[in-house]
Length: 108
Image (tube, rainbow, N blue to C red; front, side, top):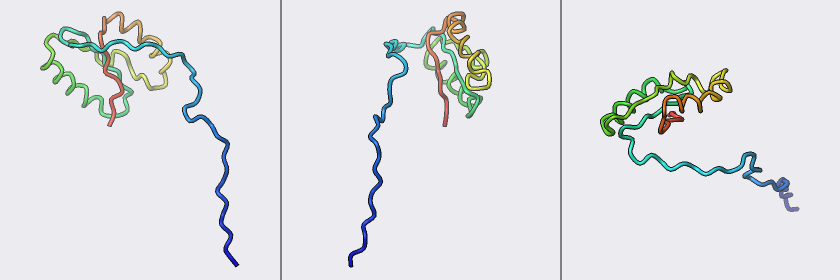
């Protein structure tokens, strides 16, 4: 007598990408040259930003004359317990500091 072959489980088919929650928006063009520009730093205070950002500042300053930085402490921990309040202030802070570009999502 032949052994019974186990039946593969069956699943309902679902769309792997999910439904869109927010409308698509056009992206901004990249800043072609950071010379004389102001760059903001966003950090979630989770991994080595205190080590990485000074290196980035040094290297970018050597490459782009007149570059200016608005450091991550200006914005606070954008991933912490006050995330909603801090993120809500970001547009006003970017305008107030005349930021041209942002460095965000530093990680391992």
